Length: 307
Image (cartoon, rainbow, N blue to C red):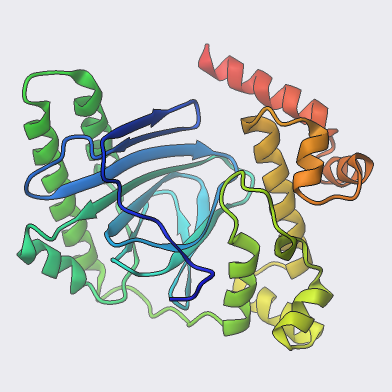
């Protein structure tokens, strides 16, 4: 496995996490038949996850917004209503796209104790994305969350039944869609390496030097011309590489301003700007606001939504 790809371990103990942007329940009931390792819901305007893999299945459902995933060598666009499934040890990563709010439900599960269902999921081939037009997955996830937090008698049994229903519904969606799905073009190795480099940091981790490379440095590192690099990136991603890098930096800055208490000076340093002035000029050019103005406005909107 590529050493740039992180292994994210399956939870081993029960744990709950919740804030205004995300709720995550790990091993909520220790189910005896199908093991629901975790279930979560994340709501962010900007979101990204670096290259990683699991030892379990993972299902993501886009409840709002749009984005993309890379699974293996394939670039996959996702939008509201789409499901994205990865299998054990299958590398993947992705991000939201555009300026619209992005909401994602996600579940990790292990089917080793139910071999037939596990075989059904493993036999799905290379299909990763299907649509759930009736939003049944979203509804079932919401019901599971209610059982986790409700405290009613035998909520574990009810949650297990809902989870089983979800799994069979997902399996049927993928089976029925298999013949109709178009074959995806393999992602250019050059573009895959660029995306891996740009997204290999995790949320709020100090951005390393590799994520501030210029296009010229990227081209030299990959031993290709700048022209070829930019042409290939635009062909697969649909946007110029320079704009993509700027937008990614801007998204990371927005996220830190909204979701952390880091000072503007600390954020500028963590994103490796040579000065707070250079960072402020970059940020205002992209948003029309200074970093401080953006933070105040974003938090005011958030407070209004909570009322």
